Image (tube, rainbow, N blue to C red; front, side, top):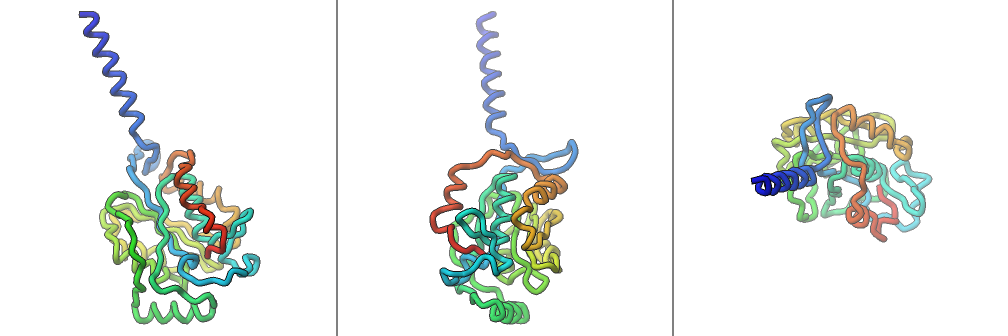
Length: 243
């Protein structure tokens, strides 16, 4: 009898440890009412990957570029990676079929034209399975006080209804504009949490600001780095201009 009880006790302990080990160290909520989140996606639009830039683009003359060591990155991408460092999750760049012009004045005219016509640019095909995520961060540079039309293309193509959606953006001094409401409406999210808007010049030193924001909205996670994820993000091709 004693032997049987011992076997049962050991089995119970093994089951308990296995259950604890399978839990993700990510939670949503505030105070003592945090709710476990199974998967996080950090999706963002950037001029990098959507613009044919010359190789000699000068990062020091553009507010959209963050020089970091030997690499240069887009401001929105930089914040996206800060979020990933804090809470984990997968990163996904929104890519348009047709690239945008590298000339800023021409880009402004193109964007205004897209907005006036409610034009949704086509996106490159992707194997992204949105159904596997419960929390989706949506990042973008603010264009004409709102989201770029490519972000609306993404929100129109992928079903985010029933999910928690969290906007984040970078800007040149005019804030988030109408973009938070646009994301909330277009995503048809079940919950839309408070976003964050970071001026481009403040992006390099924004880690504490991002950390405080995530804590304020009740999103927290493990600080451990996913080595495989980092390798896929920072490949050799990434050491170019990202805007």
